[in-house]
Image (cartoon, rainbow, N blue to C red; front, side, top):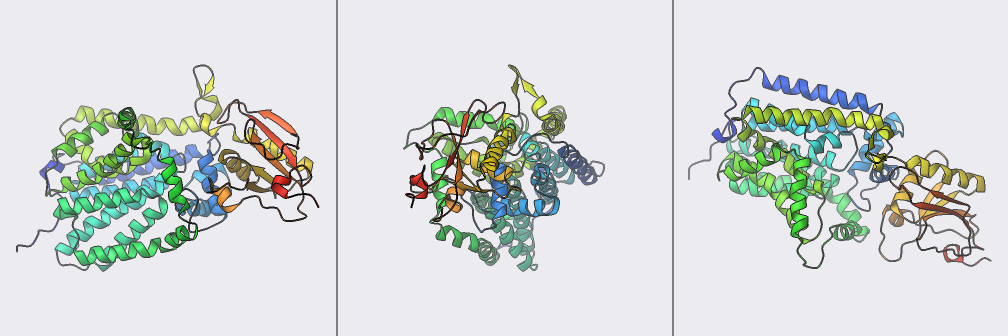
Length: 502
C-alpha cells in the first residue's frame, strides 16, 4: 500500500491563491497585538456591571470544585486566578477574555500556515479576531472564550500529529498535547463534543487530518485523564448538569420549528459577519474529499448542523455553534482571495465592531436606544438593585440573605462579597435549578438568627406571616420595572424554612 504523503504547508490550491504578501505573519501578529491592547485599555474604563452569568461564574471560582451546576468548572478557575491577582473588580473578572482571544488568533494563524499559505493564514487570524462574536466575547467573560482557545489548540495538534506521524517522526508529545487540549476544552464547555465530532469527520475525509490509530488512542487516554475529576463530580452530583442542558435545550416533543432554524441561520450573519458567513458556506460547498479543505469543511459544518437540528426541534441560541469560527475563518478567506473589495469590506466591518464595542462598554449607561432605553441593559442596574437590599440586611442585623432566583442570587453574592453576609437559595423542591440550590441551599441550624428573604413580587412566598421591610422597583437595567421585596424572616414568622419555633 503506498504511503500517504505528509501534509505540506500549502497542500491545496483551493486554500491558496493570495500570492505573496509582505511579511503577512508579522503584519497579523502586530494587528493582533494592537487590537488586544485597544480592548484592554478600554476595558479599564468599562462602566457596566457583571451580567448574571458573569457574576455566577465568579461565584463558582470562590468555591473551587471540579464541577458547577450548569457548565464545567474551567471558567470559574480562570476568573479566580484573575481576581486573586487583581482583586474582585468587574474589569478583573473580564480581563482574561481579550488575551485569550488573541492567543486563539495566534494559534489559528499557525494552523492556517499548515493548511494554506501565510497570507491566507494571516487573513483568517484577523478575520477571526474581528468577528462580531469575538469582539463581544473579548469585552465580557463567557465560557466560549476558553472553549475556542482549547479547540484551536486541539486542531493545531491534530494537524501536526497527522503530519509528523505520516512522516515517521516522534508523536508521543503531540498526542498528549492533543488529548490535553481536548480535555481542557471539555472542562470549558460541553460543546467541545461538537469539535471532537468534527475532528473525527475531518480525519475520515482528509489524510491531512488523520493521525495514526495508536496516536489517537494515546490522545483519547490523555483527554479522559484530564476529564476524570469532572466526570467523578458529575456522578457524585447525579449528572445535574446534564439535566440542566436537557431543560435549556428547549426540545418540544418532536414539534418542528422551521422558523427557529431560519432565525438561527440568520443570526450567524451577526455572529461571524455578513460577508464572512456566506463566504464560508461557499467554501464548504466547494471542498473536495481528500483535501485539507474537506477537513476544514467537516469541522465547520459539524457544529452548525448539530445546532441547526436543535433549532429545528425547539430552541438554539446564536452562539451555540460558535466553534465553526475557527475552521470557518480559514475557509471564508478562500473565495474572498479573488474578491479584494469584498475582503476589505469584511475587514472594515469587523474592525468597526471591534473598535466600537469597547467604547460602548466604556459609555455604559450613557449609551441609549430610541425611547431613552439603555442599550446595554443586561449589564446595568445590578448594583442599584443590590445596594438597598444589602443596606436593609445590615440595618436588620441579619447575617444571611435568602433569594428565590438566579438573577438575585448572583447579584447578591457579588455585591455582598466584602460584607460578611452569606447568600443562600430557597431549598429546592426536587432537582436543583441553579448553582445556589445545588451548593448553598438555606438549611438553618437550631438557634440560627433571622435572615432576609429577597424575592420578586408575585413569586411564591414561603413565609406569608412575614412582612416586607422594603419594596423597591428596579430602574433602568436588567430588571427594569420588576418589584423586589426584602422580608425579614425568623422561626416565629417562617416555620416553613426555620422549622417550628421552640
